[in-house]
Length: 450
Image (cartoon, rainbow, N blue to C red; front, top):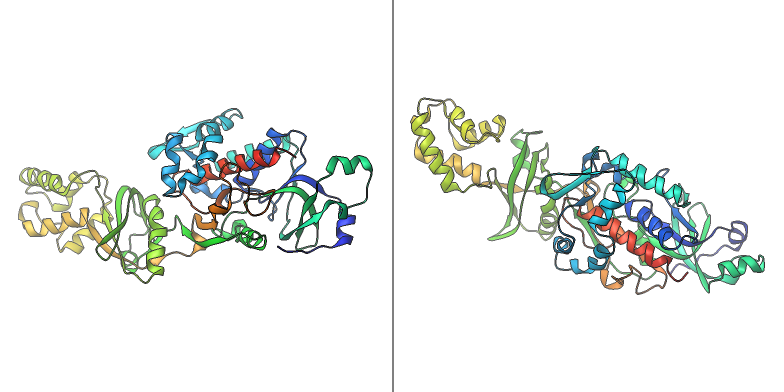
């Protein structure tokens, strides 16, 4: 643990709190609100390194803020993998229904969309942030902006300040955390909640500061890696389909003879490869495979809801009726949701002249085209950097956190919330719900027994 102390700073800056929250993202904001709700008399502050709160929150859901999922509360942990059970108490204490009702009571109504995604009705992430900021104001939460935490130390209460017996009685605690900034300003608090996020989108302030603070306090960190990250493919890039999107496509990631992951969802072609909900959800799998020197291939299914046999049978019926139509027109009838630019590229790859009459196409050629529709295989060369990831996988080891309180098992009165805790969920509002739920539980737990 860092033992930095500066007596002159301590005595001249009497900023003493019951709870200090480090990081003003969704987890930190909700932790402060929950703490105030639990203990109305507690003194609470948020230490934010930026000049404003919730910068990353504004980017979520392409600026629309997919703040949770509409699935059953008890099913949430399934989406966080084998270790997802760790979040059970958090999701029960502050569920997706609780979150929806929290915003409803403050005039923000939900919009229920595809794949159980829930957005604010006006589709604006600023609406969510404004609501949270207003709640902080109502709760008299003190916010220190541009407070870049340099370190945390422990200090005995008697060394903080000589003051009146009344203040000593009010603020007596055996020891305090001294949270000091890079500009040598100290904040003292009985308890702290670290909710600094991960490493993704560093321009929003997520630069891994919390990992270093936790390590200096004795915590272990599982190696950070990108999660919900777009896939890089030179082959896809060479197809020049930038901006073309598919509403629902299947994507399988294959390495050797093993299918490492499968996901269905929206897909968009980019200048570097592919992005969208489906590819993003498989990004961490691809990252780990390539880090381990494995060759990785993607298999796209542009019509995952129908089998290749059904497609072939449908084509045979249409071929007889439209034998004199150009094959591109026939395929538009069969695959209305496949963009024309993509269809032309698949004809090219299949060696078919798109203007050839349907009745003149050889069975072997059409089989090759239909195989492109159902099993379009391409090499995946990597992912974008962790800076471009939606969230960061890895973080504070869950074995070192009490899941019923979010309190550290290593340092008393230290709590964690949000993305800084290892194990992230898929795209679809799961990680914001994790932030709000762990934040609520951490704030409530910290506010007890002050």
